[in-house]
Structure formats: C-alpha cells, structure tokens
Length: 208
Image 1: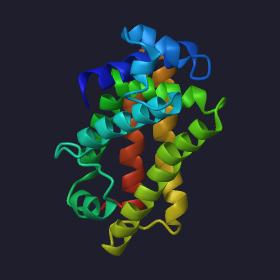
Image 2: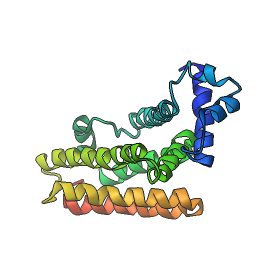
Image 3: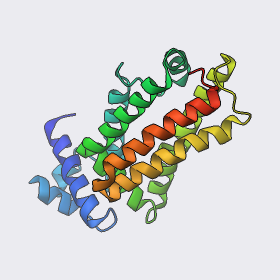
Image 4: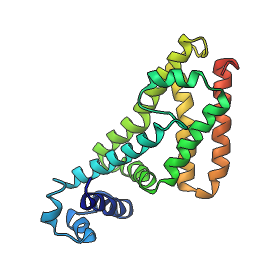
C-alpha cells in the first residue's frame, strides 16, 4: 500500500469514528488528506471501497499478529489444534490475553472494531461484516478446534456448537466493557483469564 492510500484510510477512519460512516463524505476525507476528490478516486472507487479497505487492513494486522508463535491463533484451526493440544490451560490463557491486549493497544485495530460495533446498527452491509468477523468466524474456528481436541481425547463437551458459543461470548462481552470503560481493563483481563482456564479445565477434565 502506497503512502497516500495509507493516509486516506487513516483520515477516513478518524472521520468515520467521530462523525459516523453515513455522515462522512468523500469530499471531507479528501480535504483531510489534502488532495482533491478526483485524486482520491484514483486510489479508491467509492466511500464503501474505503471502508472495506479499512476493514481488510484491520483484519490483516490482526491476522499478522495472531500468526506469531507467541500467540498462534490463526485462520487455520486444523494446524492450531495440534499446536494447542500440546499446551496447558495457563499457556493457552496467556495466548488469548496477548491477542486481546493487542486488539486493544493497536489504535487502528481498536478504532476499526469500535467503528464496526457502532455502525452495525445503522448500515446493513456493516452489520453483515460484524456478524461474519466477530460471530461466525470465531464460533466456526473454535468449533473446529474443539472437534480436534475431542478427537484427541482432550475435550468432552457433548455439543461442540454450544461449547464454542459458551467460550467466545464472554470474551467479546469483556472486550466490549474494556472498549466502553478503559479503567476496568485490568479487572476484565483477570476475569478473562479465569474464564479461559475454567472453561478448559471443565471441558478437558483437567487434561489440558
């Protein structure tokens, strides 16, 4: 991505997150960047294209961070199943918390997540993106992961789908609290660690 395209995304994200997506015009974005509207269209064909690019940039940053060995939560739950089955519940909790801390501390990722959370109620396409990214993708990933654990004799939930929902819902609930009330971050991280460890201990019968 060239420097102008990067600046357009950053300025657009600032405007979207303060004024709202629908209330922000391409002309305003171009003005903030310091270019003409016609020049902006050389890089992005529409406001929707800018928003999708912001979303994809956030996803790219998140996936790059989560692919690191210290965290190792990727889109590939099949390979992750082997990786996680060799870890204990404390180490798994550390991996989850590392990723949560990154999603809070990286300003671009954090601001985009908050923007999507708000705009899902105003825009149907953004609503679909939110569901795909923060519900379907995460639940499906953990369903596959827990199925692998079950095949290895490490996970004993009778209903994998319900277990995936039980696991992911508190994570996003606590992340939402941190987004709204940053002073509760430490408390929520502590509760998150307890949730991850308790969940794994319960469904693995202490084998992880």
